Length: 117
View (tube, rainbow, N blue to C red):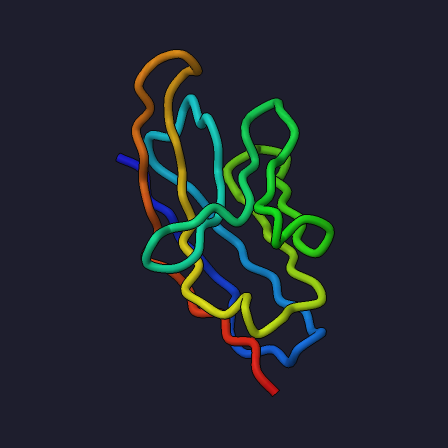
Protein backbone atom coordinates (compact mmCIF):
# COMPACT_ATOMS: atom_id res chain seq x y z
CA UNK A 1 0.00 0.00 0.00
CA UNK A 2 1.19 3.50 -0.85
CA UNK A 3 0.93 6.43 1.52
CA UNK A 4 1.26 10.06 0.45
CA UNK A 5 2.11 12.82 2.90
CA UNK A 6 1.57 16.33 1.62
CA UNK A 7 3.00 19.50 3.11
CA UNK A 8 3.17 23.15 2.25
CA UNK A 9 0.42 25.29 0.92
CA UNK A 10 -1.24 28.12 2.79
CA UNK A 11 -1.87 31.74 1.98
CA UNK A 12 0.08 33.84 -0.51
CA UNK A 13 -0.41 37.25 -2.00
CA UNK A 14 -0.71 37.69 -5.75
CA UNK A 15 2.76 37.50 -7.21
CA UNK A 16 3.96 35.47 -4.26
CA UNK A 17 5.43 31.99 -3.96
CA UNK A 18 4.58 28.73 -2.27
CA UNK A 19 6.14 25.31 -2.18
CA UNK A 20 4.28 22.02 -1.93
CA UNK A 21 5.91 18.71 -1.09
CA UNK A 22 4.59 15.19 -1.38
CA UNK A 23 6.41 12.21 0.06
CA UNK A 24 5.46 8.72 -1.03
CA UNK A 25 6.12 5.67 1.13
CA UNK A 26 5.11 2.05 1.33
CA UNK A 27 4.88 -0.24 -1.67
CA UNK A 28 5.97 2.36 -4.21
CA UNK A 29 8.11 0.37 -6.60
CA UNK A 30 7.93 0.88 -9.44
CA UNK A 31 6.79 4.48 -9.00
CA UNK A 32 5.60 5.56 -12.43
CA UNK A 33 4.92 9.18 -11.58
CA UNK A 34 4.22 11.75 -8.89
CA UNK A 35 2.10 14.75 -9.66
CA UNK A 36 -0.12 17.52 -8.39
CA UNK A 37 -3.74 18.12 -9.29
CA UNK A 38 -6.13 20.85 -8.25
CA UNK A 39 -9.76 21.16 -7.31
CA UNK A 40 -12.72 18.81 -7.11
CA UNK A 41 -12.23 17.89 -10.76
CA UNK A 42 -8.63 16.96 -10.00
CA UNK A 43 -7.25 18.95 -12.90
CA UNK A 44 -3.62 18.32 -13.70
CA UNK A 45 -1.23 21.00 -12.50
CA UNK A 46 2.12 19.28 -12.94
CA UNK A 47 3.39 15.72 -13.19
CA UNK A 48 6.89 14.27 -12.89
CA UNK A 49 7.09 10.85 -14.57
CA UNK A 50 9.98 8.53 -13.84
CA UNK A 51 12.89 9.13 -16.24
CA UNK A 52 10.90 11.54 -18.40
CA UNK A 53 10.40 15.27 -18.58
CA UNK A 54 7.76 16.89 -16.37
CA UNK A 55 4.50 18.06 -17.87
CA UNK A 56 2.45 21.09 -16.86
CA UNK A 57 -0.97 22.53 -17.30
CA UNK A 58 -0.93 25.49 -19.63
CA UNK A 59 -1.78 27.80 -16.73
CA UNK A 60 1.20 26.52 -14.75
CA UNK A 61 3.79 26.57 -17.51
CA UNK A 62 6.56 29.01 -16.78
CA UNK A 63 5.38 29.68 -13.23
CA UNK A 64 5.30 26.26 -11.56
CA UNK A 65 8.16 23.78 -11.46
CA UNK A 66 7.98 20.19 -10.29
CA UNK A 67 10.95 18.07 -9.33
CA UNK A 68 11.63 14.80 -7.55
CA UNK A 69 14.33 14.10 -5.03
CA UNK A 70 17.23 11.78 -5.72
CA UNK A 71 15.39 8.72 -4.48
CA UNK A 72 12.36 9.75 -6.49
CA UNK A 73 9.99 9.37 -3.57
CA UNK A 74 9.28 13.06 -2.99
CA UNK A 75 7.82 15.55 -5.43
CA UNK A 76 8.35 19.25 -4.87
CA UNK A 77 6.12 21.79 -6.58
CA UNK A 78 7.53 25.30 -6.58
CA UNK A 79 4.89 27.86 -7.46
CA UNK A 80 5.91 31.37 -8.44
CA UNK A 81 3.97 34.45 -9.43
CA UNK A 82 0.84 33.02 -7.86
CA UNK A 83 -2.49 34.40 -8.99
CA UNK A 84 -5.95 34.25 -7.40
CA UNK A 85 -7.01 31.68 -9.98
CA UNK A 86 -4.39 29.32 -8.57
CA UNK A 87 -6.47 29.07 -5.41
CA UNK A 88 -7.75 25.62 -4.60
CA UNK A 89 -7.08 22.33 -2.91
CA UNK A 90 -3.99 20.68 -4.37
CA UNK A 91 -3.84 16.90 -4.35
CA UNK A 92 -0.76 14.77 -4.69
CA UNK A 93 -1.12 11.77 -6.96
CA UNK A 94 1.07 8.71 -7.31
CA UNK A 95 0.86 6.18 -10.09
CA UNK A 96 2.54 2.87 -9.37
CA UNK A 97 3.36 0.30 -11.99
CA UNK A 98 5.09 -0.16 -15.30
CA UNK A 99 4.30 1.74 -18.48
CA UNK A 100 2.02 -0.20 -20.74
CA UNK A 101 0.29 -2.02 -17.87
CA UNK A 102 -2.59 -0.92 -15.62
CA UNK A 103 -1.29 1.51 -13.00
CA UNK A 104 -2.36 1.72 -9.37
CA UNK A 105 -3.34 5.25 -8.45
CA UNK A 106 -3.17 6.83 -5.00
CA UNK A 107 -4.32 10.29 -3.90
CA UNK A 108 -3.22 12.43 -1.01
CA UNK A 109 -5.72 14.18 1.26
CA UNK A 110 -5.07 17.56 -0.32
CA UNK A 111 -3.60 20.83 0.87
CA UNK A 112 -5.21 24.24 0.54
CA UNK A 113 -3.57 27.00 -1.47
CA UNK A 114 -5.15 30.44 -1.23
CA UNK A 115 -3.92 33.40 -3.23
CA UNK A 116 -5.41 36.64 -2.03
CA UNK A 117 -4.42 40.14 -1.12
